Amino acid sequence: MAVNWEPTVSLHLRIRVVPGRRNSLLKFLNAAKPFYESPGGIHVRLLADESDPDRFVEIVEYADEQTYRLDDQRVKRDPDMAAYIAQWHELLAEPPVVEVFREANL
View (cartoon, rainbow, N blue to C red):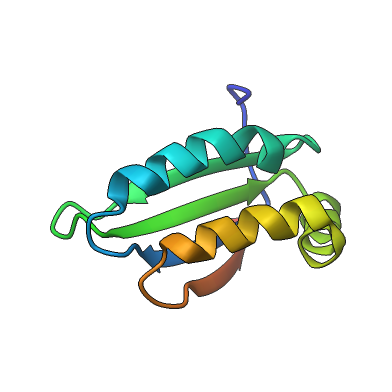
């Protein structure tokens, strides 16, 4: 990640993993992260809930609106992405809560 990274779009995926699958999620995301970030202008990170070992927020940051839109199309159409998403869903205890935030330019 560049030192001056200032994303304009952030996708927040609020997730809960199946109890006991925390390490499986971490291993999966470490393996998937290079693919997720491969188009460029994308940075993936993970926040862990300190009070609940099974809750996380996966954050996907996009350098600009175009990068976000192209990645959204990749999610919908790319078979490799579909395979990663299917593996990810197998680790989840419930459907993710998906939120998209855009820079407010203060």
